[in-house]
Image (cartoon, rainbow over all chains, first blue to last red; front, side):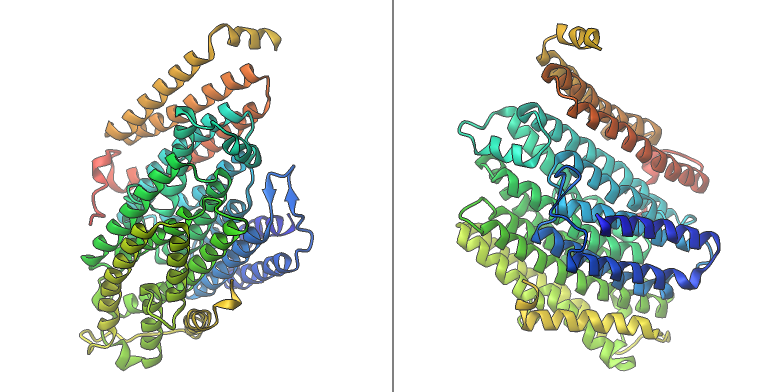
Length: 460
Length: 109
């Protein structure tokens, strides 16, 4: 509770700082608040296990995901002062809305009641609709936010219908009651299947699983880059955490498993194959995030309550995967902004040309983070994929796992193509200007990706 | 209050299910097919309100106030959502002078 209140109040404080136009203190105050929240979670001070009449449950899974989201948000805010340097107005609102959205992410990681799932989902989403339209005069930004809003509300309505159908069976929004109902013999029927399916549709929309991924490339491309970074990292972590909590309590009946297998296969295929032909870096990252949610769905698929402690193994893998993915993505988007500025606002993959000659260290960072996303050994991305495949073998999904390995190999191609650009000679005359803070964040992300790859025990 | 609950219970529960599915489907069809964004937003509201109808009926039949609490939350969140949506729409109208959904074609693969 203390951490949730702290972050909500922090958002309001941001708005007040905005009134008095204290632009330069925004990021430091926000980061201090986030660090305090991390400390609260790490020590567990005033964070009881159950909260709000056990609508929230802060178990180990929720705590690790919360700390992960807070760390990534702090890294993104470190990028903020540079990104918003030339923006004079409404900077405070950007930070405040991201903090409010973060609260939704924390709730998604810890809900144990379907009512709270709905609220968390909306608290996460509504600020994002505004943030996506952050560039008021840009038509592409308008379009991104309107598309996100319409499709997001659509998915919310489906999820609500699902929640209502499940309520009509169990008479309670409590996930524990739902688990009891599912475990009872003879728990099947059309209402139950539709209820489960509709809730999964809503959750799959947020993580961008195919066929609910259409918003992702458009919204990623149209939104301001800092907001795209936030969506690709914190929102992804929140969405996956919420997905896991729901799946874990249903115990994965056969009807749900069938639709989850289809979702997983389609997501792996469409994400990786569409990414092959992308020339815009932001769209490439969007399809990359779709393909990563495919691997995460594969991990979710194995969560069928096989044996005691299996659920927490899946939860640990999901955390490791999303956290290291978020680290690499944050670093890459900051590098992308630097390269975009050097190339007069161009967004194609070629903007990284000449990075090696201009700044060898940053080129190596780019290479390390791309390799981590591709899943090359010695990086965290490899360990993450390896763990997912191990889980899939353990649960007997051999064919799906084989398909996943194939798609992971296919995915290496487009990451390497981007990395190759950085080592080619420069075409334009633009210089790569790197502020000291950005250099620190990129270096932190790279070191994180490599260190967690060499010593995965630190996170799991 | 008792009168309301008995009045709701006059109609069998299945009929509430069918009505709210019907409204939900109309909302889905409208959101997918209409080209005017204002109408699309109205159809989204219709989807949410069909859920509200079902929840109220379930609440009366089960004599459980929990579902009504969710109805209040849905109303509140729908209001917040529509506020944001209309603000985005106003911004788009300022930039393009139209509210046709076919204008959303700058971002393509």
